[in-house]
Image 1 (tube, rainbow, N blue to C red):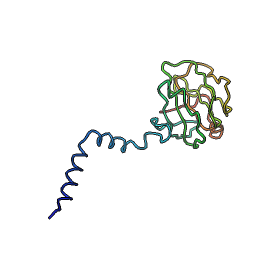
Image 2 (cartoon, helix red, strand yellow):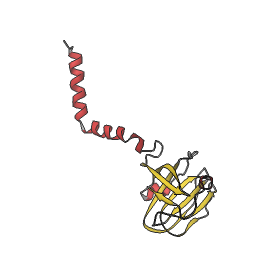
Image 3 (cartoon, rainbow, N blue to C red):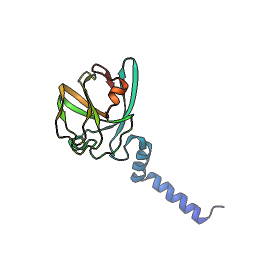
Image 4 (tube, rainbow, N blue to C red):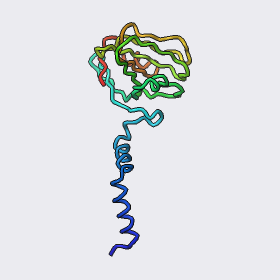
Length: 161
C-alpha cells in the first residue's frame, strides 16, 4: 500500500509534467547541447570541405544585430573545433573589428555560393582597424587565430551549415 506522501508526490509530479514550464524545461533539456553555456546562442554543426577533407565545427550563431555586435568580445578562450558564424542577409561586403576581443581570430568570409571568399588570419586582439571582405558575402565565420592555416582552409573551399 502506498503512503499518502508517495501518492501526493506522484500527483504533484504528474501535474508538473503537464505544466507549460515543464514543457519548456523539457525542450531546454532536449536542446541542452544546442545553446552555448556562455553566450546562450544557438550552437549548430558546420563543416568546411577543403582538399577532400571535412573539417567539422560546433559554432554559435550570431543572428541579431546585437548578437553580431558583441560577437566573441571578452572571450578568453575558443576551442579548436568551435567558432561563431554571422549570417548576413542580404549578402553584402562585411567589415569587422577586434574591439574588446581578447583572443586572435581568423575571419573566414563566406560568399553567397557558400564558398570561402577570403580569410583574414590572426586578427589582432583589441584592434580598431577594420577587417573587410573583398566582395559580397553571406556569412562570416570566426575561428581561433591560426586555425584556418593549420587546416589548410583556402578561398573556394565549401562551407556547409
